Image (cartoon, rainbow, N blue to C red; front, side):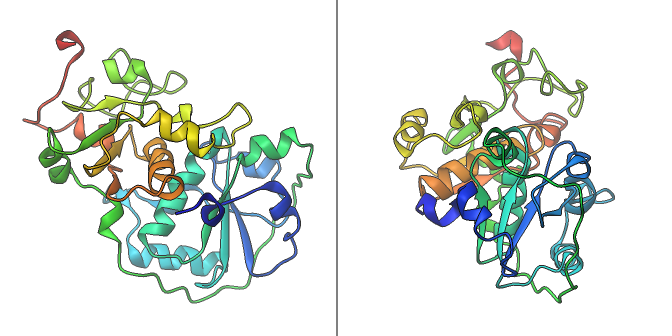
Length: 277
């Protein structure tokens, strides 16, 4: 898939701010960032409240996703443009959700909030709403998601890419350095996984690196094998999934959204521990 099908730049967005068929949605790690300011006309999706089921401890099911988009006023044929902070990491997570449930036209704003702000473009504090719709999602696309047992079967037979920081991969940390160190009972990584931190795919301004640079970054990943990417909770690995699947067009790439929060708390699974490095 070409990047022109999945990425738009700030000029493209500015020219369509008043187009009712283009829906801007901000998704941030800091769920209060939208309240401070955002691109004019943008809606907000709160990844914690809107995309997660706290009882099942899984992502929202098809009915929940349909209810969310219906309430937001998003129609099946709308072009949805997602953006957020920190190199679009949670925006990429939301993009992956939209692909799981088969939305036809979803894209990322290349560079997200950071590039928009660096350009000095307008941000506003006024919130907007759209008339409710009746959104019908597709059945979940299992080809983009990896589950626990599939990950276990992939050890030694498929590419496993751990996109966390080197400190998390080695077991020195159990979460990004700026977060509370929790989420899993054990530290380390899945055996045979290689460490390619997700943020290496982005330029300093938050935009994605060129196709040539991205291909070089993942040159050691065997293109003849299917690939599973993971991090701690699935958001950073969704960014890497976007790079491999949507920009570089590699087939057979899946995101293990359970990631280390699930795997590192399982009983009886193989783990490469820090002392075994």
